[in-house]
Amino acid sequence: MGFREMRRFRQQLSQEECEAILRRGTAGVLAVSGDEGWPYSVPLSYTYEGEKLLFHCAAAGHKLDALRRDNRACFCVIDQDKVIPEKYTTAYRSVVVFGRVSILEDEAELRRGGEALGRKYHPQGTPEELEKEISGSLGHMLILEMDISHMTGKEGRELAQAKNK
Figure 1 (cartoon, rainbow, N blue to C red):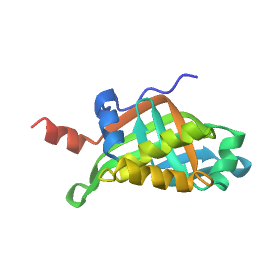
Figure 2: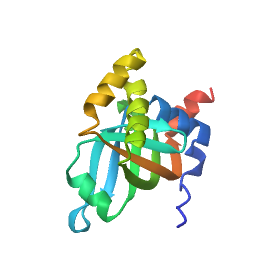
Figure 3: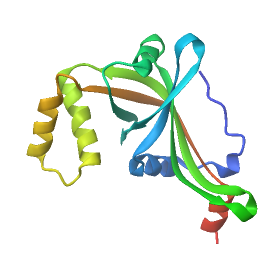
Figure 4: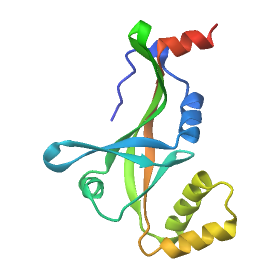
């Protein structure tokens, strides 16, 4: 499937800028095709590992039911959104990612995902502490992995103009 070109292409961020946003972000919104075709979106913590996003989540629920029916999803991370009242606008920067999501089930994959998430959210932790946390969680740990098919980022004119000054 082809993805649409960005309508406001002058505001499009480079691939490198998109990746930098994904690396520094801590949360975003995952959108899936929910019950009876209704869109369903949910905020999630994540980590970016090359061409993949990893999410830790509960072992049951709406998002998992939706992904089991249709594993296509979209994930949005807002890097900045500052209201500029006098201009009736915001200075924003965001990334939207499209891809297919799989549920990691193999213990080695779960460990790999748990380690990646642990390093991001507790970088000061020791490898021993992380191993203890993962080993204690393996029985009920669920990690989703999104293979990125398409990624685009956009920056509001106000931020782009400020960078070019």
